[in-house]
Image 1 (cartoon, one colour):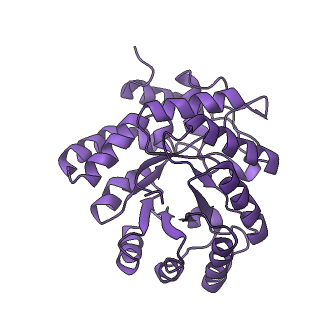
Image 2 (cartoon, one colour; image 1 turned 90 degrees about the vertical axis):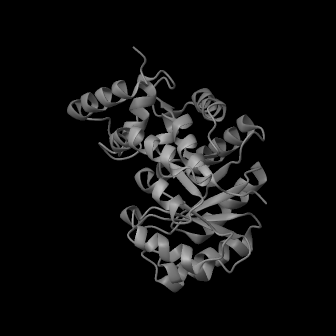
Length: 295
């Protein structure tokens, strides 16, 4: 079974005139792999999964797996606010060759803690694939509590969680309650090094879209216990991490990738809108200072 650790990229989904840019996605995947990213996560929040059709979702996962071609793990986003839809997407991810599933807590429904447990249990029993749960209360409206995470961790193929609460108290409690081999991954770039310091296994990153080499190096150094060098990289990356959230993710990441010439269009899909002129100017200044646009 794949060991989920290091810096995984929550990869953006490029569009041209509102349609999936298949070649652009393949090029992005190659850019990530050649720059040392530890894993690829298609169809996550950063991949605008909420506005992908099922056919597009399937295509993005298939293209990612095919382009990666075994060079690094693919952790496919397969979550939904419907348990039956989650199971369907997860079955497809397994058939496509993904190493695992990233499964968000059901959004909008606001299930109880027992409802969350039953949801993940049903999905795990329906599809024999490693599952990383995904807790992001700011987007879903529900917080999966550490006790519920620990309960789910007793299910054989639920192997970890992406914790995007930015709450080290909660992350510590999850690590304390769960088995040692349960992978706790930060869902927030700015807490990722600290999460590793308290026992986490890495992160699933937005900033890795634009700076994959530095993000992977920072986490790999932290995992190796070299926190001095990891801390230096954290503070080098910190302004860039902040810039990726000048507006709603993934709008700044896609705009940066277009500036870098990595995709033809950084346009998000409605209801997300392009960046305001003021924030775009701030973004361009930050990425220039980082060196992403050369001279």
